[in-house]
Length: 135
Image 1: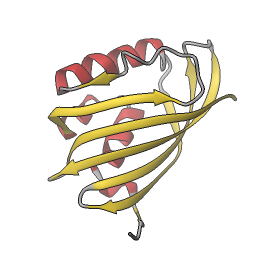
Image 2 (image 1 turned 135 degrees about the horizontal axis):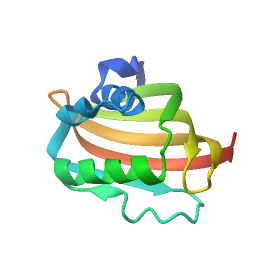
Image 3 (image 1 turned 90 degrees about the vertical axis):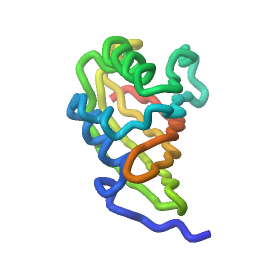
Image 4 (image 1 turned 180 degrees about the vertical axis):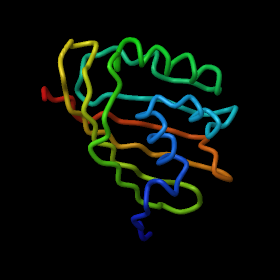
């Protein structure tokens, strides 16, 4: 298998991340009604059990809670790099800086996202937060 870099903004995941960073609720137009969504953390003791959704409505509620508890001051994308895996699948590296409400401090975080899209609509999202470092 050959993974090909692609401009993130040409993918559903790239558009969703751009709209997420901009706090643009139109991001949900790019989400399937039956999204399979989950965020996991590597070696972090934060409770992420609620960071999952199986519907667009569930994801909207979860994103609203993320905004309140995790990103109370929003986030800034430092870099977004996406690889095409084939058949609608993408691997995205998302590096961001934000005020982390859980720790009450500025942090940077590197995450990896596996996503799938059909006809420009994201229907699968798995994010692994690999680092949360004090900025």
